[in-house]
Image (cartoon, rainbow, N blue to C red; front, side, top):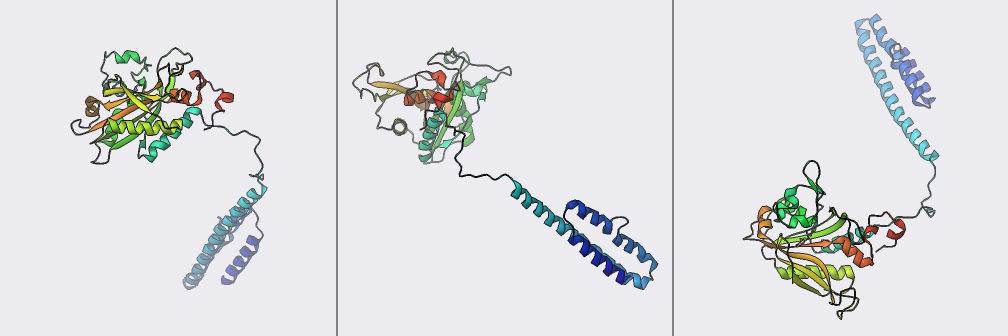
Length: 346
Ligand code: DAH
């Protein structure tokens, strides 16, 4: 019996060495461990032995069975590795040093300006948030102090969805959600958030009106935030975007979600303040609306207006990109006209 086991072991080793594929290996497994396999037969033959012999021989057969199982498993791995290496060897060679025949794409001009502003604000400790494009009426209007029947709703011709929700008409729609997400700021650690986004209004298209456009909004809320903070951040922002030291001025402006509200102007770079057709002879260009966040808006966002103040600004990102790149027709942005859009690289 024991001699026979040695023979089986020897035979297995020889046959295993000749194997080159997983199929062959499976056949070998069946030949030794299958129902009628040599090892299985040896196990069956144990019943012909005396009980003393059975003890010794039984142990040996089981040992052989394990040896074979392990050898098969490890050879299976070896074969898989071999197959993998072969695959790599046969794969088409890809030479990364050959210049591509395809032209590389470029970022969309709005993306370029957005990223630039995000980078500036990130260095000043702002968090970037992206609000939802489909919004509730509450977030878009009520939560920013525009109750039902308020005339300000008519100024934003809104797309309504069948389920009663709307496409956001301005990035201010995210204010309430952001305030609730971050809560009241800790002392000396104002909440600073920037939230760019795509907005939608039912406009008739022409060179200066689009139904789909981008805004970029920012908020800073803390226990000691004033209009001076607002002016400082706007000056840094605009100087970086226009790559010059811009002068800013504030004029009163009305928006239901800020009090006081302002229109912020920058000095005209073309005439340097003396008056030209670009600035309509005023020396100033109207650039962005902003203001101190209305106490009602803070309250609805769960922030106590008796303890905290904040500023907000809403930048027309699409308009800013038009100014920066001197683009005369807003419809270019959504036109898919790569030939023109590709000109703007930085
Ligand atoms: N949400 C306003 C709009 O789209 C823009 C705006 C004005 C945002 C003043 C502000 C702000 O944060 O303070 O017309």
